[in-house]
Image (tube, rainbow, N blue to C red; front, side):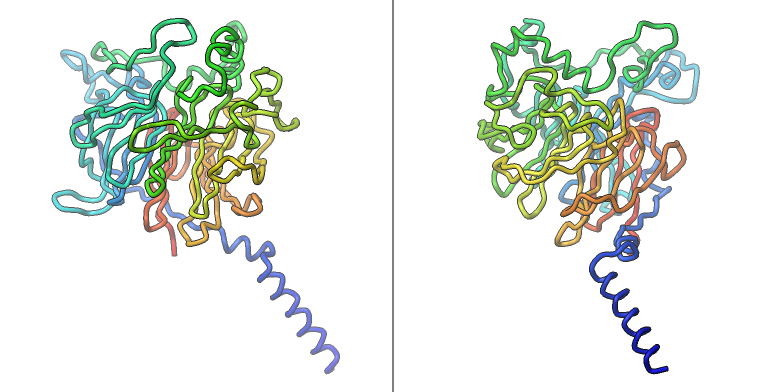
Length: 422
């Protein structure tokens, strides 16, 4: 009998050691639990209808800035703009909406506490002082109270079509008239001529402009294409930008003067090493990884000085230090086709930032990955338009309490809050 007691005790010891070492049960327990907050945000004022969310940031006061594309709205969504209106709702919203993340002086959690209109675009950040940086065909700094543009990152002086580079202007909209909708560019229409779709197609088209590339190669210390992502490193007085030229480049400028400092591409390639051969940017789902970034590059940097660059079209994340020295490649959902799987990058709010949160507009999850190993531990959400589901989950942000905010760019066209369950 004593013999069996020793065997049983030894087995328990092995199981306990396995759990401590991070076995499946321990990993299941380590995945964060969130509950969708159906009360947030409150109904938008003034009959506004939000467009596709292309930027999301939590500011120093734990309030939420939403950058949206009002021009994504279709005519049936803006019939209240007509004179006389032919429906109770809605009208185009401003492109920048500031939403309370908690009760405050004169407002309640979920209220709209500010807004301003700016040319719509992609990617945004808010620095420690509260200034807002928006990605359009360049990166521009705005005063959050007045909506006034203050300065812009240097951009090449012309477009690929040979036209002078122009500052964007606010769109002129005919009341009650909308667009084809936010997913039009991703659709294949029955009977129509087949065409390339997604960010990989955009990269291929860009690389075909050989004369423009010869004039503005990957070493160009300015923005060449449009903007995908923006992050500020206030302590280092730096702003990180991903433009979409050459499949995507991580570009670093000074935060105060927008002076170029450094940049890199896939696998930490120096700007001078980035290939402009289309074959090096090509990727087939479940095939070998591309030699260069494929398209739609986003990123974020961790507290321990690592940069996580998500190549959405390439279904992977490249980890470097802040100088661009390559450390690790994390492959994820490699079967994913048009749209790609690796979107926005956020971290869990524990001291070690143990987890990566990756938003995926194609599979409609937020993936939870072990940051060190890249192993998938779990997911949040599924395809759908109910609370807690996603249709084109595009952007994500976290607040100081670890709550998760998401923004959808397809027909979801909304922001949601998920409360971290302790």
